[in-house]
Every structure is written in structure tokens, then in C-alpha cells.
Length: 288
Image 1 (cartoon, rainbow, N blue to C red):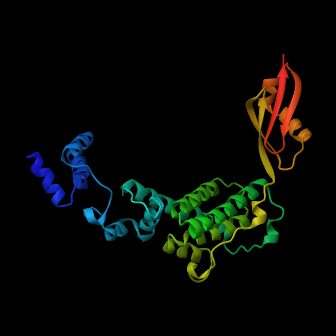
Image 2: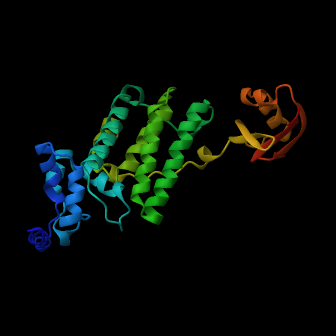
Image 3: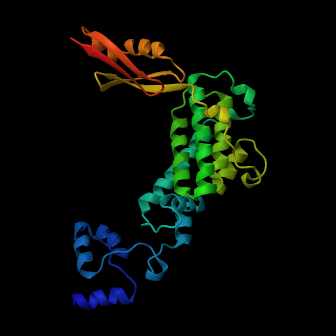
């Protein structure tokens, strides 16, 4: 009987996993049994036309929308790779697009009718600078991933990181936010054109996003102004400090000695010497 069942599944290009998960859920059976059955009767395979185990795109589009399906397919794996289709993965892509939608719609009152130029970004707070830096780092990476490497999944991952940072943005400078939203939408447009066009319209822009040039990074926004330097006490890292990128040894040592973690490790001890490698590391040698 076991052999006949296995032969039938192979002849029909089926696996136990095709519908078994749903069946087990309905019957309230533990899914661990499925793994044992697969070992005996035939293990599940990745989606493939030749194996007749593909997902109906019309059904997925009806349930989640075309943008979600496109995003999930491009994000799940590089174009040359197969991947396992999972409902959790599709739902994750759907949640991300909802986050993008909510982020922009909830801030429309701040950015609607706002105009900006490069001159407006000369004197910004540190948080504003961090947002612009991340935005233009993302633009640069997405450009490279799409045009040079065809790595759509890593491009989308970078956009997701940007969205996460924008959710933490407290200052909400209208011009910084407007620049971020416009470029975010244009970066998403090749992957999710429908939601991109709708959000573009809601921002007060005319026409379809496809007719606008893809964003280019502002190199000035990418210039490093500060540097994080690890501080070692007797060759063991005890703290990290942030200093100007061109800081000299005296500036770095003074900053380190005012750091609470460093103070704890040198308290009651004599500083024998400091070893500084510019832009890389500071080692404070102590005794006692």
C-alpha cells in the first residue's frame, strides 16, 4: 500500500505537503506527523511548473493585491533562485506595504504643499542629518542593486530599513520628511507601482511615478561628519565614543576620559600611556 501511494504521488507530480498542512490544521492533528509521512511517502519540493505545485497568482492577487505578490516574489530570493512559497512571507510583505501607507498618510498634514531645495538642508539638526544620510545611502544601494547586480531582494531590504528608521524620526522636519517620502515612493515604484502611484498622487504630485527619473543620491548627505571609535582599557574594549571624523588624539582622549564607562574602568588607576590610531581605535594603558 505504501509503495502504491508513493508511486501515485510521483506519477501525478504531487507531494503530501501540497494540501496536508491544511488538512492537519482542520483535523487538529500535530504537524510533526507530517514530517514522518513525508520521509516514507515523498518529501515536499520547491515550487516548480514541472512538479505542478505552483501557486495560482490570480488567487493570491485577489487575496493580497498585485503589489504585495510582486513584492514578495522579488523579496523572497534572488531572481535566479527557487524559493518556498509561504503564507507568512506574503503576509509579511503585505504588512510592510501597510506600514509604508500608514507612515505617509499619517504625515500628509506635515508635508502637503511643502517644497524644498538643497539649500534648505544646510543647517540641520543631527537627527535630520541622520535621516537624510540614511535616505541617500538607501538610494545609492538600491540603484546599485537594481542596475548592476539585479539583486532586487537586497534592494527591498534596504528600503525596509529606511522605513523602520522613518518610524523613529521624532523631529519631523517637513522638508526632510517630504524629501524622504518622495524618494521612498520612487524607489518602491518598480516593485509596487499601484501603491506608489496612489501615494504619489496623495502627496500632491502629478502623473505616474514611471514618468519620473529614478532618485540619485546627494553625495553631500553621504559625507561622514562623525566617527565611532572603540576605546580599549589594557587592550579590552570597554566603550565606544563618537567624535568628529578628523578628531586628533587629544580630542579623542578627552572625550574618552569623560565617558562614564571609561571612568569606571580607570577609576583609582594610573594612566601609563595612550595608543591612538586615527579614525580607528584608542587604547588606554593603566596600572594599579
